[in-house]
Image 1 (cartoon, rainbow, N blue to C red):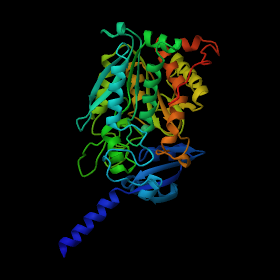
Image 2: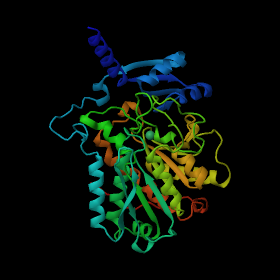
Image 3: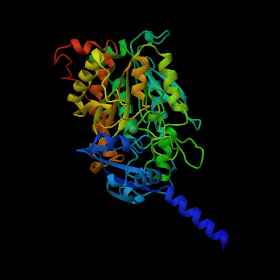
Image 4: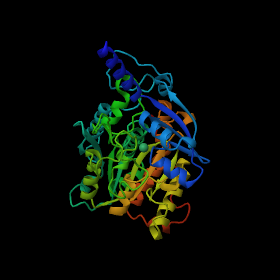
Length: 422
Ligand SMILES: [Zn+2]
């Protein structure tokens, strides 16, 4: 009898641990926003209201620490999270839910990269970026003319990284689309050809494959954000975009392993962030970096960890670049901390320690009412397409980021650029 009770309690706890909640929060004042940023990730902020999907632990924290700021909440059923998609038995466990199979799994990313490298050997080579916690190779691709490949690295370089966060699957699709576009247009499109001949382009579509594949395991979405670190206690995961060293742990992240914004036990405690660090430090030719995330349709630049801007000429450069890219994808350009303070992210580190002009794109959709983290495969083409020109511009700017300040409006022509279709 006692054993049965114990089992039941354990089962109930397990079920509870997997529960997510939708929350709507009052973040009208900076003080409230700061309080909340220390507890959770805000998926979306509109007119002083934050909307988010949080795990059970984070929800408990909100109820305990800021109960008055919760305007609305409800537990999310598996059905709500999956938007009506049902698991389809008989397929590999690691496949996207029904209807979303167009998204790339880890294996599909790898086979696509391998096929590209085979097809375009003169401009594409394999990039072994590192190894995840679970031991998967983090595959990437290097795109540049053969003559640029030898070290020391002198050809101006840029790094694109997708999927720091597990459930943000579109953040893998945008770089996958960029790879396809660059390779297919080499030799026929003058702008692309010139860029590949004169730049050293590195693209890593799925950094956090452990988390991303866990998020789809069993063909059901799970709202998973972090990597799959087994923490002390019984929780899993470190928030990789709170784990970089610059300003680590000084706001907008949590020390509690059960939180979805857990910063990790130490800066760069995770092999995935360490892989970025090592790669960037070894490639002194990198001048630009783009970290893809979802969602909200934003172009974010440093600082994320403080309210002040980076200042001076660099500030002007960031603002000008962001505005120019925004004309193409129609996203909203802003300083990362404009939403709320968060520390330990990729861009504060890349800019703060390496002087790299680093952007975070929060891709589509614009809001949780258009699908949030799981907008469906139908948006892949459009999201990929509108972010091609911003990526080309960044590749161009890697040659001399400050050149953007000298260019007259309209110089950076995108007219006549042939966009691809799948
Ligand atoms: Zn993210």
